[in-house]
Amino acid sequence: MSGPVELFEVGPRDGLQNEPGEISVAGKVRLIDCLSRAGFRRIEVASFVSPKWVPQMANSGEVLAGITRAPGISYAALTPNMRGLEAALEAGADEVAIFGSASEGFSKANINASIAESLKRFAPVAEAARAASLPVRGYVSCVVECPYDGPVAPSETARVVAALRDMGVYEVSLGDTIGQGTPEAVDAMLSAVLEEMPAPKLAGHFHDTSGRALENIEVALGRGLRVFDTAIGGLGGCPYAPGAKGNVATGKVAARLKALGYETGLDMAVLEEAEVIAQSLRAEGAQHG
Ligand code: HMG
Ligand code: MG
Image: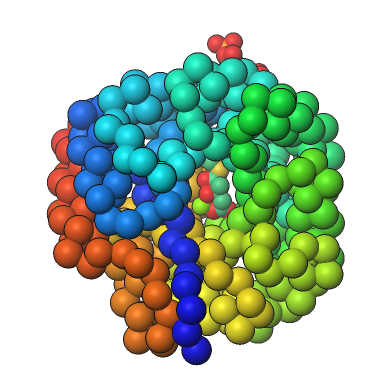
């Protein structure tokens, strides 16, 4: 097996959003500026959500203003509604993401809406983003397992993927939000999802709670996926998904891909520098928590 595989770095958003103590703008900027030297094409750095729901992301505008943008990198932000999109546009995000769920329980807990309500909310966000020439990515959470509803049927995940596709998202990232997916469940889910969206427009987003993220990535590679979301140093989790550990660690995935013969184009020495910064931010958060 060979060929390019892209890692989409989500540590500064999916990772840090879960830290209980406040992390300074300067600390986040230091991490992102380091990651900008590692060879990523996309880095998720911000989230324009309610600060009452996720206080850690409240300084997202300042973070986008503070980073040194490297040419060729898309700095991405989450936007749950029109208000979030307006803030992302003002802050100069290069792309945005709408984020839904394949399970009702998580949809309610995470964005206070049923799946149907959330899709209705996302449609104008996607339309306005496209009108502003901003690429829109879609996320589907709980693609195999939900912390509230249990196992999720592949057809449910495929249905939400299709709805996001119809809104014109350029890629859908499939989230094993609580890292409970088995390779068998992930394979069955992908089989259903691929009926709706081709592999080049899908990404795998695996949390590593039960230590099976690498196996699941290999299953997804076998199904033709070539983009994976990862977080530097395995930072993270989701505040509305009890038990969700960090995203699978960027360095761990890069090393496995290399061993399998794929190229990520990432500079491992820079990743190690970024891991040290990520650890220090964790310590900073713990001090203020
Ligand atoms: P709500 O309470 O139903 O909505 O929340 P609301 O419209 O009543 O707003 C509540 C308050 O938030 C109001 O303030 C709004 O003004 C304010 P108040 O009047 O009470 O002072 N507000 C906002 N403030 C800033 N920016 C905004 C915004 N919108 C409203 N955009 C809402 C609905 C969607 C806003 C809320 O539920 C929310 O922000 N949820 C986000 C939760 C979140 O960020 N979760 C983590 C990201 S998802 C994830 O990690 C999974 C992923 O990684 C994939 C995977 O692993 O599966 C992507
Ligand atoms: Mg996540």
